[in-house]
Length: 271
Image (cartoon, helix red, strand yellow):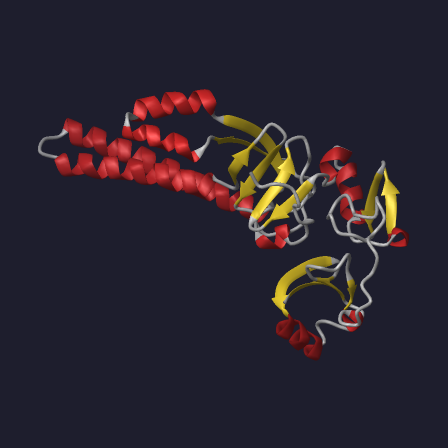
């Protein structure tokens, strides 16, 4: 049985029940620490988790629009038409003071489906880093994603050019805004710079090999460097990927499990 628990207002886990009990023995989890597992309608104190007293479903509007967790009405405040929990209120107000639109400060129609994130195309994501779940001012990192059915790859057996043309015609596209903390932004920029460095170094080696004599090895190394730059750039610059795109929503992979754990489960079709 897997449990989630809260620390300083932030959800953690999942952890096995044995690990949860160990945390209780060390004092990291107390009898009043809020915990949750699949099958419970809401978060309950650790001390009553096995009492059989499952709380009733939370009423509509009692889920925090910023973090997506369910809270009693008396623990929430309504700001600009959104219900916000006490833990999210300071960051929500800070974001508004810094000019972030209220719509981008909240999460709306966003769910988890296994290791995938499911979201409506017009819905903003919660303002947390998708790679580590750290709070950010707003989900403002813009990504343009493309997807087509995997069956289309069979066209490569006919011709790469035929596949490329067909993919450009039938692929579906979506533009989303995600949260990315400064640490992961720096990490991404580092990959991009390394990739461009390899590409320019490869071009330089090819030019030097072409100008000189008997420098075929240098030309080959240049080609390898360019290919390596392309691989590093593609892998390092990718934050999330589209697993599927429809007219209404998008399925994303590459989102950290701690971010997914804070989202309600997706109960719709996966196809």
